Image (cartoon, rainbow, N blue to C red):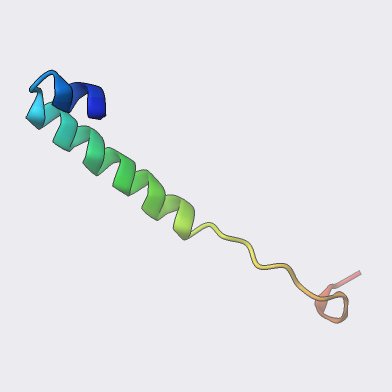
Length: 42
């Protein structure tokens, strides 16, 4: 993204920024919270 903006490719840099934000949003939704032992099925 920085390389694209340095080369004055602002549209490409913006597209890369948007793609990165979308990937970060997906990862935010995939956080797993650990369960305590009393909450596990065995």
